[in-house]
Length: 355
Image 1 (cartoon, rainbow, N blue to C red):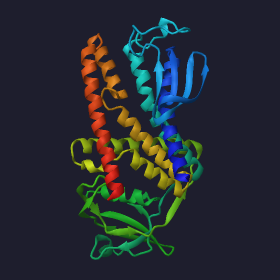
Image 2: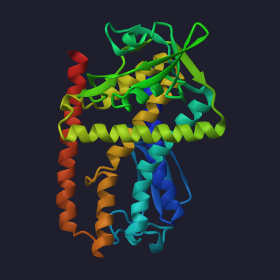
Image 3: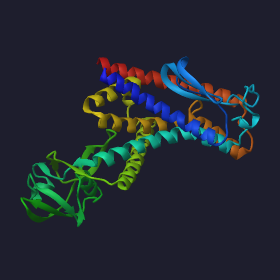
Image 4: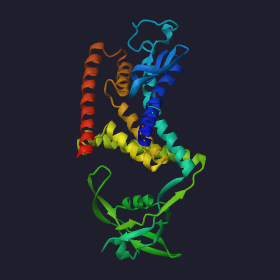
């Protein structure tokens, strides 16, 4: 039950924030909004405020903001609206901003969540305490021992294990000066990393400088001020955007197998598992999923926000709208592609579930 509630709340928050982006920017530009809906299909609950119907609908697989004139300038003008509020009659830049606001709000949601987590809980990561040492490794030859705390590399302070691994990987194999805390004594050692083949985040085999040590598993928390948490939340959001974009591009180029593509069942499983670990875990997953949702919606595929942005961009370049014929053809192609992609994702989800 806890997992089910978490899934509903997470998906609801992602949909709400995405549609809220479209809604707010449309209203700021004076574009009429006929309806704001969470979900599709028949209305379960709702109310009317001004000229807009706000509703919760039966099918919880998305949501929509119905804009005045969204179907074209020839749309009927409902009572209470004016032609000046028509989406179709606005310049392409205005329409582009309204469409782009949805994905942008997904990125903002991820930023707000991470900002709050860093401010309330601090930045948590592995402490640079050596737990294991590989036989005949660069670390063993240099004299590093289990229990050593790595405090600096080449004079640069080290707080987290991740910082240390980045410094080693960026060394390109040159000799590094390690400062260690061993039972309260400062030890200075020269360590020369060796190239080792390992799998990266995407499962690809790469050569990486390594010294041959493993973490002991100690966790350190660095408290963060409101401002520092805001900056760190933004940095982490940009990092997630970068990594997610790399993963999507690698799937397109087949560097990552298609069986890694996941769908709604996989998302529900991840959120449900996160709920068992606590609120912070659910919020962290929500931030990552929100980044994924924002990026996918920016793909230049008709039906998605990115497709509409592409049409507006072409209209700005060629000074005329893309022909209705081509819009219809590409939209149909986009629908077929998305149906196939969703089918693949659900197939992979079911295969993982029952295999």
